[in-house]
Length: 594
Image (cartoon, rainbow, N blue to C red; front, side, top):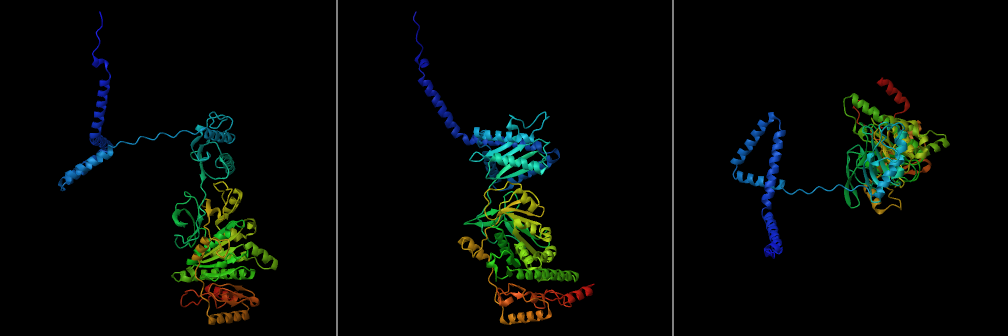
């Protein structure tokens, strides 16, 4: 008996496929139509769940006040015109926002590649001799060990070299020993790739070391008016995380915020004087020129160029520049006047305090002494049988903070051993510029740097340390000599814009009075014929051997006699001379005060 065939509807699959496609299309259309309702309902569920969690997390003693606030809110909404409608719209909008589809979580980044794994394994093997000891039952570092247990974080740059690495080390490692740290840092520096600067952050509490590749400091920042207060001087710029302050600066055609190294001077400064050391051509003169330009709007400046290179010629004859001297005689006269001026300021300030008054204005007007290459002048002084100019800095260095006198000394690194003891003792703010080994940095700054030395050091690049603070990387703003032919037009104009106006020339009568006073002082034996100091009041005064000193140079005997800087605002019953009094007058005054 033959089998009867099945109905066609059961054997033909085309109607079934069409039915499935129709059902899928209808479902998709319904989902599109009801998508807002689905989103709002999902958001309401999430809001209700969040409300339940908030209610359960609220302490029982605070639930009553929470209910009272909720009831008050409902009542306020009910009383406001269109309040319920607005409340409903707000709830629907919040539900729609809460019910939106969340973005899928990003997949975790893939692990390091084969080359990166090889680098990490090489770093691990290189650290084994320093972190492993015999007898450790569960060593963290062992030959053919697992680097993943030691390196917790790592990142690589485009070239495949480590850009950041956080490693763990055993608790028995002597991380408090500087020599032990230096060995580990040297190994990481060699294995991670030379030619870059690395920062090492030791976390002794967690037994972790973080290595970070430092970006180069900006070298396109020229001299400009920085946003600082009175008594603040910008030495340069450093890394972003090193200081808790930024300054807006103009670099080319853009303005950006950069972290500065700010040196504070004045009565409350703990490091009122600065010492700068470096090799020739590394930017020491640039830093002193930058300091002078920042100090001129708020004080007077004395510049002594011991090297005699003429790098400070742009400051001569300017308003506020009391003198720019490069000869030995002029330097000795200038420093002797500065010492007497410091003493005069101290006496006037002390008498004002005793009288219950504020110090006079001329006492509180800062005086800056910029001394470049004092050791070169010391050689000349020894050859001529004269005193070392550094001995005259003892009073300004020791008492300068109370007298508003700031001293900046700069010299070459190989001549640091010739600096006098007062200079090394009282200059607690230190800067070293140019290529330097970690030993040199530690000898100058008193602490080793936390970074590796750079192979390519641009001018003005170095390290700075203010008092007992950390050692900071430093990049001095470009402040070249505007009279140098090799200076770019942009930098030349930037420096010229910061220079004050030339000082007004001295009147003829005033010049005659100064010359007469100088002759009187010489007749009294209070000055020598070959001592002259360049002043900042303008004009010309005859110097030794018929030499004409520009910028209103006056004899040192005039500065020390009865004719000199303006007398301070002293009490009416006290008449203070403008300069230091002769020896017999000083002794009489001391006996009178006693």
